[in-house]
Amino acid sequence: MRITVAAVLIPLAVAIAYAGGWLWTALVTLAAIGLFVEWLAIVGLAGATRVTVPGVAALAVAGICFAIGRLDAALIVLAVGFVAVVSIAPERRSWAAAGFLYAAAAEIASVLVRLDPAKGFAALIVWVTDSGGYFAGRGIGGPKLWPRVSPKKTWAGAAGGFAASLAVAVGFAAFDLGRVGPLLMLSGALSVVSQLGDLLESAVKRRFGVKDSSHIIPGHGGLMDRLDGFVAAVVVAALFGLLRGGADGVGRGLMVW
Image 1 (cartoon, rainbow, N blue to C red):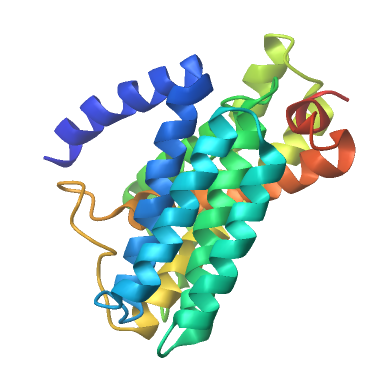
Image 2: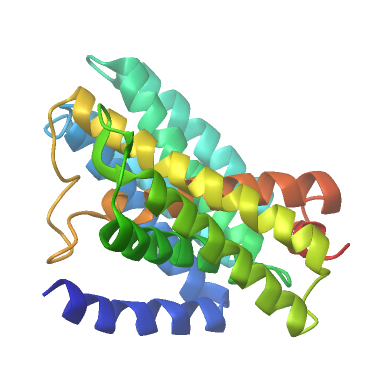
């Protein structure tokens, strides 16, 4: 089931990422809404409708603003949504706020990074980090990375994922999509961040005694289970690109040296 679902979803996601535009924005928005809802479920706020509704509404309206090119309006809507979630949350307010920020950051970063030549780089780094980590971890095994938080992850898996990410950087440089030195440093950093994002989600689930964020994806669990590393990596990639290229050139700031 796990392989079958991946065989269907991966080509679809890649096709939408390649197409970009409103299709990509719609996918990102739906994913952000799913992340927020799953986060609330994990921290015990699944039934808090008055928290869920304003948060989901803000993420959805922000997605529409992104689709029509109004970044400024999207940020305002998300800021209002954050205030609403924090103000209305009946309990565990800090966890509700963190969940909205997590989903909003994923939405903003995913849209910004896709606007320029960086499209696909951060996602591919996370993808190969996960795959390389899985095969190295299963094939080599050995000492655990952080057993208290994630009992299955090993140092061998972390090293395998890191090595796979460097191969992506070399591949991009070979096709003249960036300089090899900066890309190696960037891919290595994003690989580490991706694995830290994975551990963060594991820590949150363990804190609340939850195994999977949901069961929306057969054989894989929830959106957070699949996108935890991507969220961390794409947010860091967007911040880095923003510092170098500004709001209108996040991708160039990330990839052009």
